[in-house]
Length: 119
Length: 138
Length: 169
Image (cartoon, rainbow over the protein chains, first blue to last red):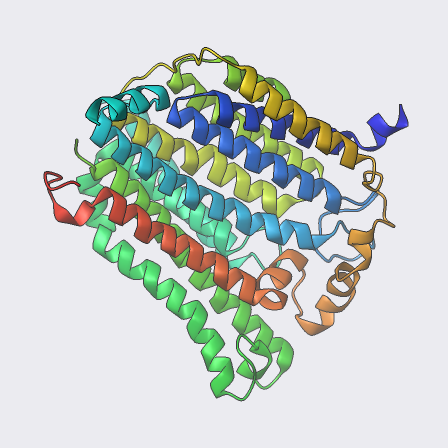
């Protein structure tokens, strides 16, 4: 059982990653796909942050009386990744809006049908 | 949403606090949690809240799309400019040690302006993306 | 909590409730980041994920209108892909260091230098800020450029400056 409890945070991030992957592959609605991509990203964030955690450590802000800090490097990487993720999500949403403009639909299956009809 | 008096009055109380908090996060980022990225997003959410409750037209009187786009470019240029300034003062690109007489002071100044550039860019990018979606007509 | 929200997102059909659950999901993950001592990250996730991203999804949703997610008839492809990936990940997880172990390789590379030297070299208490803006200034410059490029892409795609959207491709 120790492999389960020792690596608990990693299990959580794997579960979330698989949930995000399932949404991206299986759902045809483009909005839902974007939410799935977001869940996938968050699982990676959780994975990085949980690697940076140190037992008995505190937040990496220097203060008298604290000696053990969690690793600041993953925090920095993920901090910027979150802001980049919202920017890329915005680009994705803009694409979805344009697709809706063109096909009057945001569902993958319907769009495929419409494309076949046009040909 | 624009007709709802409770939301409007609450927003009058909240929006100044949100903007002030954003500035606090921006300039206190060296000492506590916070920094340019967070401050930019919080500032943008204050402006977006105003735009949601009072309409895009009124919000554009405060920060127009053109101004937001210009400021986004200026923020990025401020960041890169600090880096280039380091070269002119005899250091490497983004080397803050040469910005002041004392290396630690130089680092302080460098980080201050870098975070300011990040904050300006992130805030105005978020605001203008929101405007772009809100102004989009079918 | 996170897993429950994620599964609810899988099951839900109404797009509006999926968007709202996405906001809740971000807020819950922000609390998780606080628990893992990453206060800066939690701050950003709460402001970005629960605030801005939900608003952006809603405003894009307002343009496209109410849509219910349709069901794909055949789930097999997705299930096979997910199970294969899951098996690979579970196989690799046994190589990971124990959660919270101070002797893990990640804590012995550049991190000790950041923690020990940044007080003298940079002189500000928040290590995350000093790594972000000084040690990894190039990185952050790249990230800000990506954010700016995303703005350019969104403005191009939505064609805000052209006024009417009659001349679309």
